[in-house]
Image 1 (cartoon, helix red, strand yellow):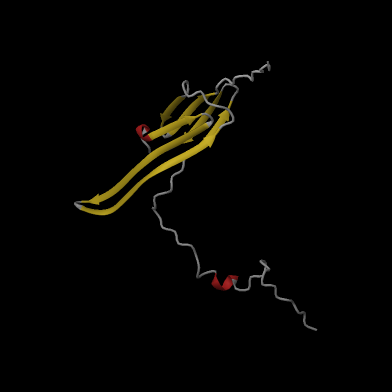
Image 2: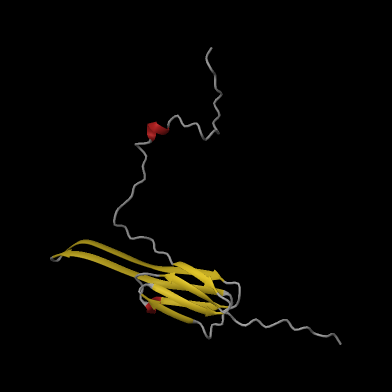
Length: 143
């Protein structure tokens, strides 16, 4: 006797046409495309401050801006990359990328922006963000 199986259209494990179309539909990838840049970073906390280590390669330090507003820290940068290959007076290939990078994050405690320090060396932005001394709650007596 033959085994009968009920077809379930919502069963994701049943793939009868998987091998049939496997060679036809493949993602297209172009080589030498400018990569989408991101600000990758690490944030560490000690008792007195926060240390931020952000990678922003290929950016001039004049094009980096850091804004501190209480617990909120924002890093923005403007990226300008140009690569041009010439052979004589004829341009064979020209690649340009212009864009803005932006990263914002919130810390647990307010930052003392007056004593914060920023250094940019070899594509790495190091921020030292001292914590503001929290004012203790004051108990009021009702008269």
